Every structure is written in structure tokens, then in C-alpha cells.
Length: 368
Image (cartoon, rainbow, N blue to C red; front, top):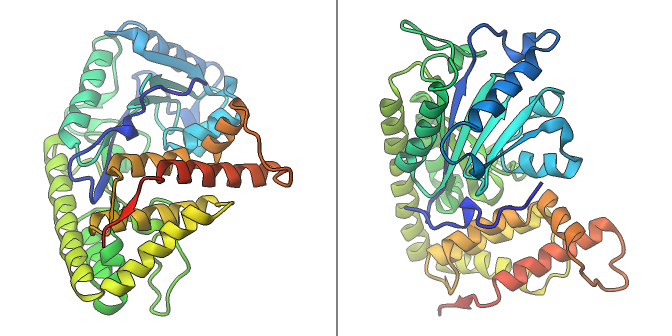
């Protein structure tokens, strides 16, 4: 698997002080084929052939690489899983496939729970552009193949929740100020409950930290994913507008609490940020969880004006570059000379992660 030259997550995005990325997924299935969980004999291989052939016939086919998952090595599968484009179902499915655009911005998963799952990513809050890209590819495919749909129910998919538009949207948001004040104000708890009442789901991007005394478990790095729920509530444009409204409201709440943090808790805020910067600057080993925690505290420092000389897009890119499978990929393909006592793969990965962070953040300045 080739490492892309210019990955989408290196781009600057709108409102990326809070919204780090946007993701849209379209689920589709062919007529005259059972769903992947009910395949018999050569159904899966025939579906994979149809999808790969369709991508070879759309505009600019050279921009796409089609791969059978069973031909990927274990590390390639882990990298794609970390990037959210390869599901556990596909990893165990011998007829699963994937089509990847060279920049990684658009992916087509083949024989996941549905025959086709188009996934498109964008930096920041960028639903309009992401939707435009994925819809153009969807339309191009539908000029070549026929997807199962009905006038009454819309697109027919394996899960009832995906019937209708077949579209699921999500945004990756960073909410450190709301998280910081939650024990005192319960603002984040109430916000999450309100989102869920409106049909959205809120989940951690990197897992949880340990739960606090009040039972609230903050997300690691204060990073949350806000996702739409069922696909049959309104049309595609309605669902996009609904997510935009919800995410913008969350962003305004975070900015309000960010100002409150800087105005009323400046010492505690600086302690959080300085400890994270010191951890990165002087550590010799960083685990993935330590790295995520420090990285997004440093981002909080930038957003509150404590730290300068670092771009939002560079910080977000580090959250991908320091993941375990990516680190292993870099370590395997580059020649690094580690200290003599750094002599196991685990130690080398943790050492390399610290070196990558130190190099990326070497110009960060504290704004007194």
C-alpha cells in the first residue's frame, strides 16, 4: 500500500479551531444480489468485480486504486482501520475490497455490510464540498451500475437505519473547554443529551479517559464525534443542514467556554498546556494515548492564545501521523538509528513518536 503524497488531513479547514474534520458516507446495494451477510458461492467476487470495473470507467480512473482486502498485508489493513475506512466486518470478509483516491479523501468500501459504501472526508466543517465530491462519484457510478431503490423507501440497505438516503454524516470536534467546565456546570453533559434527543449520536474519537467522581467519562483529548442517526428522516440536503446547525451550535458553546476558561481559570489552563508541552519537549518515549492527550492540550493552548507558531492543520495531521500503525509503517520503511537501549519494536515506536512530535512542535512559542 502506497503512502499518499498529500493527504486530505494536511489541509486547512473552516472553523477548525473546533471542527477538525467532516465525514460523509453513502450506503448502496446492487439489484439482484443478496446483502453481503447472505452471500453464497461467488456473489461477493462478482460484486467486487462490478465495483472495480465501474471505477475504471468513471472520469479520471487513474486517481483511484482498487484493492482486494485479502491481498493487503496486516499493516496495510491496520492503517486503513485507523483512518476509519476499513471495518472489522471487512477484515474478516474474504471478498471485501476497497477503492482509494490517491489523496485518501474518497474511499469506496466493497462488501462491507452493504455492497458499496462511499466515504468522503474533508478538513474542518466542510459538508458542502464533501457532499459535492461524494455525490459526483455516486452519480457517475449510477450511470454504469444500478443500485437497489424504491420510490417509497429510497435506497435499500442492509440496516433499517440506513434505508432512505443511505447517507450518514459526522464531524470530529474538539471540546476541551466544555470538558474542563463540565464537573462545575454540566454543560457538556446537557449538550450531549440535547444532541441525542435530536437524533444525533455523540461518541469519543480515541476512547475515554478514566471516569470522574460524577460518573462522566471525558473523551481522550476531549475529541468527540457527532453523527447523524437514521437515514430516512428528510432528504440529503435536510440532513446536511441539520448537522451543520447542530455542529455550529456546539462550536459556539465551546468558544464561549474557551473565553470563560481564559478569563476565570488562566492558571489552571496554563498548567494543562505547559505540562503537555513539557511532556512532548522532554520525553523520550510517548505512547499513543499520551501523544493524543498532549497533542490536543497543545491545540487548546493555541486556541486560547497561550501558544503560537503552529497551525491547526499541522496539529490535526499529527493525530494521524502518530497512530500506532502509521508509526510502524514509517519505522519499517525508513532507516532510523535509535539509541542502543531502544531495542524492541515497542520502544522504537514510542521513541519515534516522541521524535516526530518534537520535530513538528519545535517552533512552538509561549505567548506570555
